Image (cartoon, rainbow, N blue to C red; front, side, top):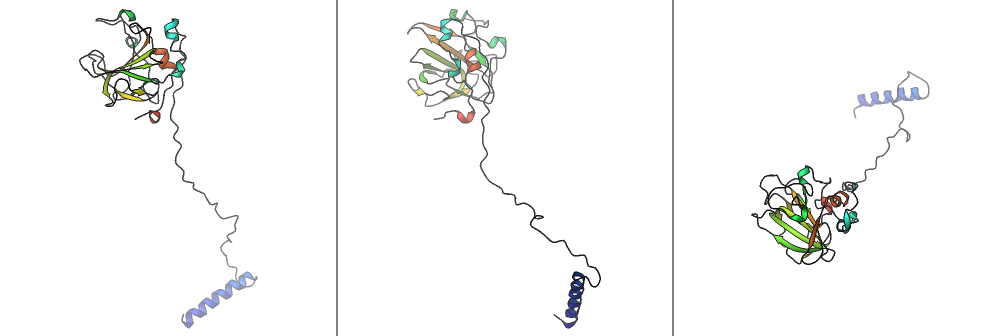
Length: 235
């Protein structure tokens, strides 16, 4: 440091010292930084986000009509066949059970619609409504039902059918045990000639090895548990 610069620094320090003790010209000093004036330290905690599946609320279902439908009660013990963040229900009147249909129809359904049509997006996953055993796997697109899967529950007392599938799991074979909410295939339109993609869903009550009774599955899909895609059981 040169002699000239040293004199300048000394003079500045003298002026500041005089101002501090009350002598000399007044000098505005910067405010003191105290603990109270310091900004608070923000603690950032990095934790994985809580993923809360959207679970649609169960809807009110009518009381069972007769002893056959009563076999399905309580409906809350079943799982909706389409996992999603909304509850898919039959929309148009022709998609409901017993709706008038043309062609050769079963007398057990009043020669009408023997199930319900759930119109969800194509390729949506389709799951088993309950624990059971695969009874039949059909992959014939020429049939009216298209590709479909049949599962029996409660020791063969109840059967559920899932029709018009575009895809069925390759490892799904008759005699295979499946769990409630286990993936069976994908919603599609095989066997469908006029309407768009949908799941034709049927429920049957087996009275004997040769006798069965179809029942309206709408109360079941209204009051059953809708699982999220993350909860779907995939082998």
